[in-house]
Image: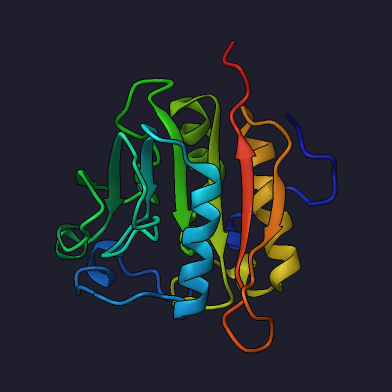
Amino acid sequence: MNSGGEFPEFRPDFFARQDEMPDEMFYSIPRLVTHIDDEACAALAGYYATLLKEGDVVLDLMSSCVSHLPRDAACGKVIGHGMNRTELEANPQLDEYFLQNLNKTPDLPFEAASFDACLIAVSVQYLTRPVEVFAEIARILKPGGVLAASFSNRMFPTKAIALWQAMGDAAHGELVCEYARRAGGFDEPVIRDLSPNPGRSDPLYAVEAHAAAHA
């Protein structure tokens, strides 16, 4: 699916960051915390509960010490991905995990149509090759499988891409939709406003896109 022209062609400087040190160095220090407040965490878990079915195989991409899955989630398997082993080992909801720098290597180490869902929780702003990563997500999702990329207004500012930092929340949603459109392999994405208590808790949004039937 091609862009409708609302966004210009992506330029390399859109994906520049204030801190271009290797990501392996930045993420070498474990951060055993959540990156949104408790109300937003609960809202994200509630949203996931509406998406996931019993037995689903889930890829928690760009994960950490928490996956935000509902406590009673009955997933078939949850595979986590991240950049810090200590964080992933501390996550009780992961069945297994792997380490990979997606900004260097966007290819995912899985067969096509392997997952029912791919979740990216409040981390999409750090991708410097997002269209390539989203194309890989479309490849590894089963037809009808869901990508849910959530975001707030909180971030590590030195590692968020320049384009993200130049935009507000509404434009962030349109940008993530554009990633999915340019990647191909998804039905038309939609933006969900999940903010649990506007003005009093962290805002929370998600772009939801379902994998189209594979050719």
